[in-house]
Length: 186
Image (cartoon, rainbow, N blue to C red; front, side, top):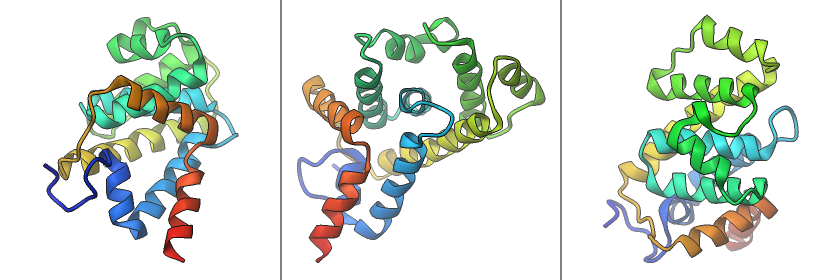
């Protein structure tokens, strides 16, 4: 049972954003920028980073939702997503993304990223923008995960619900929620 009142049956951060639209709008705008930017990292890579950090934080809702989005963006049957969650070091991803996932893991552990991780990422072709965005996605998802789990939101068990959510996120990103929230406020 959530620690704050949200509409029954609305899972995870979605229920919180609906109930608290002022903060929900800002959090959703941030998600749109972080996960759908057209510069540097591809949206699938961004969703994989969000999935990986959420899995490290053991946030069931965020892990499942962003894994579903990544699966739809990658269209590989989930092989890369499942492998990243299991052990990113052996996942079928590029060496550049593997190095960026190592950086994301360091951020999740406590925020300190060492020169060695940065050097490896640069040696694998990561740009300043990609390193910046990786750190920001990882930091933001630590916050999102703690928000969702700190308020004991509901996470459904039905994989079909997450698949549908992932399909919508992959196709439309996070902006449609902002449009629905704006229309509801009028």
